[in-house]
Image (tube, rainbow, N blue to C red; front, top):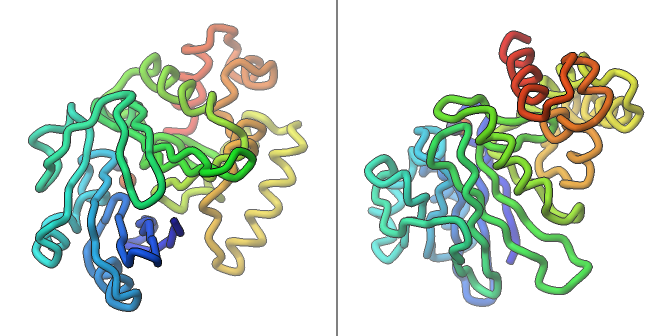
Length: 257
Ligand code: ZN
Ligand code: FE
């Protein structure tokens, strides 16, 4: 399985999962249909699945048009999103599995950004290889999603689940927000050398208009303040040793950044 990153709208990423041997593809969060249709045409591949992480328009905007082009496509989303995802046929819960080509994805329920948000984790085929996490707007490179429908407690629980995955996991998040996220991160974790290095690298990448997604989960654990509510630097920046309160304060500071 290859993952092909497509740009959409102003700063969204759509991910195409592609299996050349069977000439099939699946798409994660088609913000719009055109870039997906264009790439599928180029690959001469058939779309067999749409994997949605949550109901926001910039993640499901292409569903209907893709369904018109590929009548056999199956549309997946979270069980709690019933009625909110156009064309949804499969209603997934924590621990459910989805299949694509030779890979099996595990569904992780991650409410917080929305009350129904799910992530898809595809473990590596061989031990030692890199796994793939499609986390929508829950975890971003250097940041996390805003809490539109969830509580800080829910988001901490959700991010804890993602934080427990192996370091060697590609984080395929749905927006190019990394530079701004790391600028904020430095305001709450300024002495962190891994964060300083990452910021410098990302600054160069963005000045060349290169994508910063995927990132590696191991790097997120070292540099993303929203996975570091239990680290002394973040506790002192928020003046709190209580994990959920620490997280909530970091989130509040980012909302005002
Ligand atoms: Zn969203
Ligand atoms: Fe989004």
